[in-house]
Amino acid sequence: MSQAQLSRYQKDGLLSPMKVFSEKKAGLLRSQLEEYESVYGSVMKTPYRNKPHLIFPWVAEVIRDSKVLDIVESVLGPNLLVWGTNFFIKEPNDGTFISWHQDSTYWGLSRPDVLTIWIALSPSRRTNGAMKMISGSHKLEQLPHTDTFEAGNLLTRGQKIDHQVADEDVAWIELEPGEASVHHVRIIHGSEPNTGPDRRIGLAIRFIPTDLTQVNGIKDYATLVRGHDEYNHFEHEPCPMVSLGKSEIETHTRIADESFKLFYQGTDREPKFGE
Ligand SMILES: O=C(O)CCC(=O)C(=O)O
Image 1: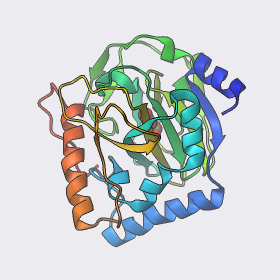
Image 2: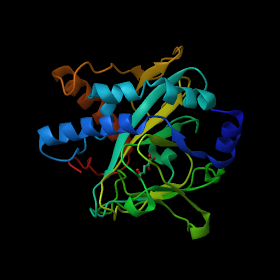
Image 3: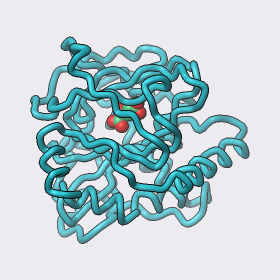
Image 4: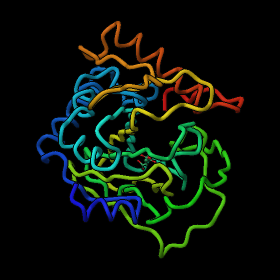
């Protein structure tokens, strides 16, 4: 990342578009996802949308990609953990959306030094549910959110910020396959339903520096992807060797179940598996 890009990230809390993969490579990743879906006989659902880097070697490779890590290192320094990954997939006209929110709300991480790289595996445009962000909103404190649990909202609790967003403040994050956006954990963002003819597929990777801690009293896990971890605040996750292997599934289930406890902490809800 250049000094100009870093200054822009610090000012706006986002950078987009950033070319991380060729269109061909993005197409290959998409076909790996779709190959899994055709064997499984359905679109990818929860729980594998959460932490897919524990179960699919091709996702594990993406989170270790040097181009991706160079971007992150410019902001967070040389010792990097991946705390989470999520597939955000919206089928044409399925009505799913993401309400305006700050990622930091329920993650329980000790500082807002958390950066997401969201990689487009399909075109992501206003017409098919691209992300929208409020530039500069990462400088706000943690805002109150209301849990709506509304149908179609892809967030675990359907959480949304309590204040009004003005249309003129919205930055649309349009991406071509292989391009990525970078966003700060406190930025206000969301997305509308996909009304286009193609799926909208994004892989979000959440990076943290190794000295962060989990403050919500839950055992937490992360993958060391660059440098050293002298703190060991997070149990290190293993790298999957084969797609959907027995030990990969066991590891994913154990760790993803813990992360769902965190996301639903303080509610009487259960994870929405199968969405
Ligand atoms: O994929 C989307 O539309 C939203 C993703 C999101 O909220 C995130 O990556 O933090």
